[in-house]
Image 1 (cartoon, rainbow, N blue to C red):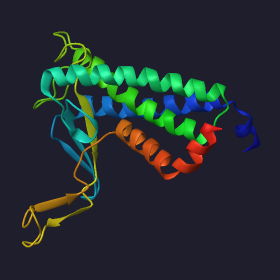
Image 2 (image 1 turned 135 degrees about the vertical axis):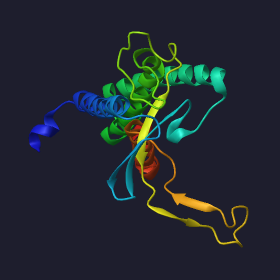
Image 3 (image 1 turned 135 degrees about the horizontal axis):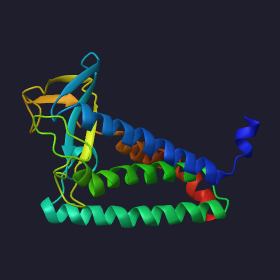
Length: 209
């Protein structure tokens, strides 16, 4: 433990970023090259499922504004990643609270993980409709630069049922918790944000000094 404490924060942050990116991209590439769209592998009954899906937009399968929205979102992500990276370096140089730095590192890694999909997956893979995709296909990829789709696969439908008929708006309709399909990059972003929100008082008090 004492050895770990002696490691500079910048190396710990880099290790966390590289670890998240490696796990995220390894799982995505495996799914893309071993499964077709819509295919499922049940890992733990009906509670934990690897369900291959792709999306054009934001985290957890949300969409954003078609083709123009895709370019806008990808551009915004790139700018945001540079801003977060710069801020992380600034915090490290200022010897600010390490917990906040690691949280931002998770957010940074998650954002980069999904950017890689958007920037390059359309070029290096063909599509996955009714077939398993090929890495670096001879006929080229399924989309141009910036138009790649984000690969999602983690699905946890832990609880399912129907809303009671008296329930407002959704009365009688089916509900599933947790419905969104996501990836490890989404998870890293979510964990980083939650840590900041939970410990925001101590984090921002320390940073403001």
